[in-house]
Length: 226
Image (cartoon, rainbow, N blue to C red):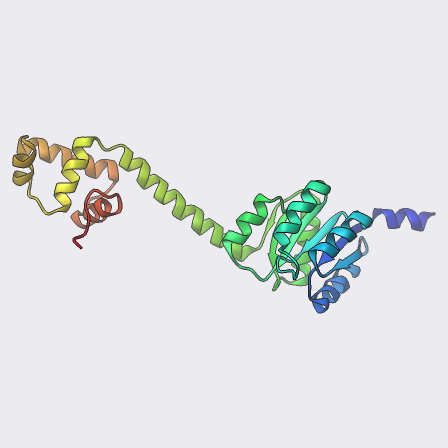
């Protein structure tokens, strides 16, 4: 009976990958751990859904490229059928779009197939502790995309701070108008133009005219000639 109790405590894992060699390698890694066991293997989405329903694993290690459908499709289906099961994606796809979609669909982790054995085991344990695990290389890519997005959002917010008059003046600056020409074009004093220019640079955190021109182009205040 003691043996049965120990068996029940083992982490039950289902492997879903269309390459038998990879499944065999994963099985060897997992079976080297006293608290883990592989309770099933599948090479397709349909097979995986059937086995998952029969075996009720605690964790599914999932490849995204499967012959009859995508791993993402499987993820959607299994999340409806068994919301509690943990899903660790193990894939060759070092693509942020894949990663974001997979995580939106409820995966608990995303690793690339070049992960070391000990890192895989560590990730499995972390996922079972309800942690989110991302491949270090993918984390860097996501961070870069996030920072770029933040930078663009900040630009947009700064643009919203410009008044209609300031946008008008910025478009004229970008076209190469002098302060005097701008004052004549919009019927204000040169001093007023200079004051607006200072405020524009302050709001946009821009000092160089070339940067003002680029900003005006990016935000549609001027257009390049055809």
